[in-house]
Image (cartoon, rainbow, N blue to C red; front, side, top):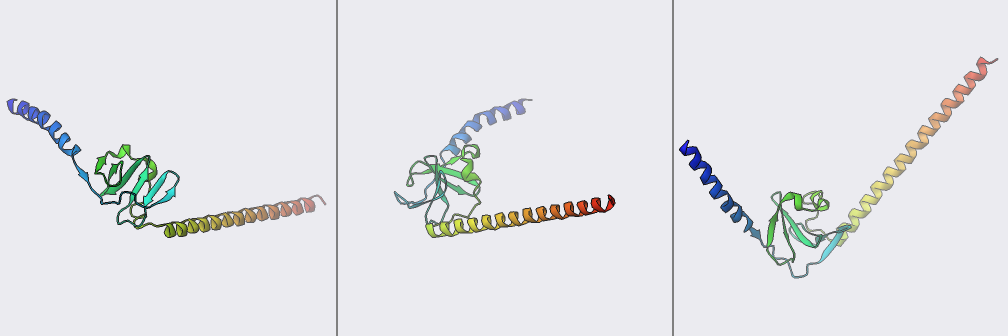
Length: 152
């Protein structure tokens, strides 16, 4: 019983110290004071042509390393760890690695590709709608013909 009590007291004493130690962890990225940015969606920008994906959203610079998120108010400041629930959903949903070395030309090509995919999808949808309408009309005509023959 005394051992259990001693263990519980030790854990209670050491847990706050471990939490305080974790708060002091930060990273430096070596970004320029005013890095060039590319808008990738409303409210989200990414540092252009950078080795890491560094996003700017909600007044913060954000970086993901080893599945963890870090943020800083200024690009040259120390980035501190952020709990996942505090990271904007718009950047959490971004596929890891897609925006590394991102630039305006890549973004324009990506947008053109998405537009082309959307247009192809709409064309396919129109074609399918047309096919369904044609099938419906053919069924209607067959039913009408059969009804006409049955009435004679």
